[in-house]
Length: 614
Image 1 (tube, one colour):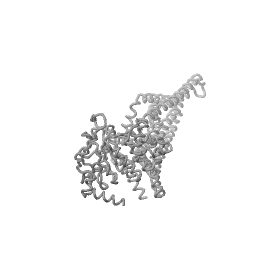
Image 2 (cartoon, rainbow, N blue to C red; image 1 turned 90 degrees about the vertical axis):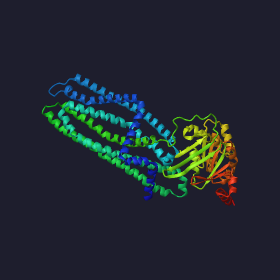
Image 3 (tube, rainbow, N blue to C red; image 1 turned 45 degrees about the horizontal axis):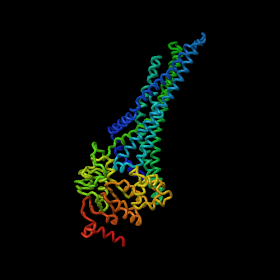
Image 4 (cartoon, rainbow, N blue to C red; image 1 turned 180 degrees about the vertical axis):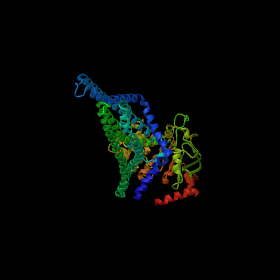
């Protein structure tokens, strides 16, 4: 189980660092709860008129429900007289009819409230899902590198389900219980003060029990939300790497890890149910004891003639209406604490600020495609404080120039590419496009100007044409075919069962690694950026596919700026200029042929590559 705990600890550390820190800090936890309440308030604000109508329906429902025991009292004491006397049939029928009207009113108002609350709840959930999805899309690459997809799925599924349960009935139970408790307390005092004072003796016990349950269940459901999130994270990782799982016969070990995580979830859920098993029966016990005391004392008062029988009957019925909501509150707490924990998670996500925010005032770029001049001025960058990857880097790349970045792993090649693509902002210094700081450009401006192709370009479910058209949804079929033909993908696409309309299946599983990369090249070419970044973009291609791409690259890279990162020097040879990097510094800079003859590091790399071909 040590490895299981290590995996779970790593998942929490990587994906919920801030949430975990806040849970251990009481003040931060209070801030998180406040943010979750503010989030719910903001989501409900557009529906305030409908909420007013819903509250009015609840008030009417509560009034109709409260009328029942009172009418029973009148029927007993006024409609049904002592046996020695004759009753009043007309009054009895009238009170019976009023009772029926009250019952129908209670039914109709409850039905109307449930329909209205469902409409409000679904509208809130719709808007909340939209906000969370939009936030996940806008957050920077750095956030997604530390926040696994499984946790994102948990935010949009299990957390949303918890909030939905609250809207499905929890709010009705809470508000109606609150109205009932307040109404009944007032009516009991009005009916008979001594009996009401006897009832009030149970209040301290109810208060202490409810406060304990609220605190304990809050912690329990927060742990439960975390356990569910870990289940989804591990499940997603296992299925995402199912080929590796089968290849290394990892199934038994994965099952052991999943069993441990699943057991954590089981124990967290059981703990929450144990709390309910204490709270709900305890409320009922207090209620029954109170009723027994009131029945004994009230019966004695009736026998002495101090109160009427109908008053005692009504008092007992109202007591039932007082304690029943208390029992329902245990179920409401179940939904409330789960939803509160979910809201805290969602509020934490929605409060995340993009590490690469949009500018307050965007720079007005001229119409047409930019010239593509890229400049890095005194750029320093660190993924983590104190661990500098690029120390004071200065690089100028002319528009239309193809520059290859080479060097050992960890030299800073991909970091430069991410800065030019503005997946990150430099710690200090500036990255400029045509003299404009990238931080002064909107995402839309930047994505039109700069496109990156990596060795792991994602292929989405859908057709081949849909994937090529990804960067330009308005492209025609002819433009899609032309882009594919230019980079040499038309032959293999035409050979597929349905050609460009062939469904590539999940993550492009119907295509080979080389074919997926060619589709990514066609996608980038169709987008027609001013700056194209190729980050190990040919590493997954076999030799025939690579030769096709090599022929196409000269066409793709014509009249545009390109940064090419590759270990295969066959790709580097098409560059106009090579930058050799070492620990984030440029140690060699020049045309490939000149660097080969200089006898420096690039010459050594080139010779090693030639020797590997022999």
